[in-house]
Length: 215
Ligand code: SF4
Image (cartoon, protein in one colour):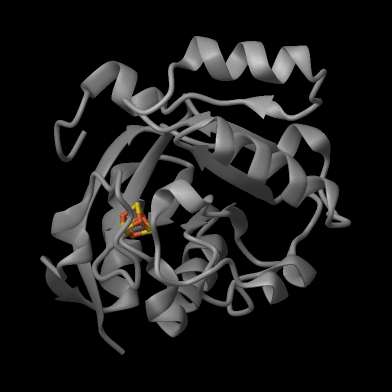
């Protein structure tokens, strides 16, 4: 089995409840979306090289970090490879997290890896809606992340959470401002005014590195 990988590097995780922890990041090539605020177009365009899952896990083992993040692009477009990488990495003692855009089934890695699932708000301008079937695969430690571009997105996200019975803790529901679209201060004020129990979340890697690639 071969998978297409855009890049592998070590970093401090930029998103999710594990933000700030060191990890090996494996960016799989290809995406089914074209979000207005995407900062990894090179990966979406398929830029990368072919690896076997064994080669990916070998690179991650050499990196000597406990966390392995599978991201993209959209990693679950290569679902069988993601599962194979996750199984082999976990057998080697690594912790595996998967970031996905929420429009592709998470079934292949649910209950195996830790999931960080995006729910794209209208401001992302994407062609495919959130795959609601994914909610049934969520485990208590998984996360749902909303990247918000406006007050309208914020209200949409609040309504989404209120209208679904989610099997995860409130602190694993992440509201994040899209960089350059709404200010972090504005989102913080809205969430506090509404007494939301969800997690206010910033993209840590952007604060440190801006749009620099591969860090
Ligand atoms: S889902 Fe992620 S990788 Fe794909 S276009 Fe949107 S932001 Fe970019």
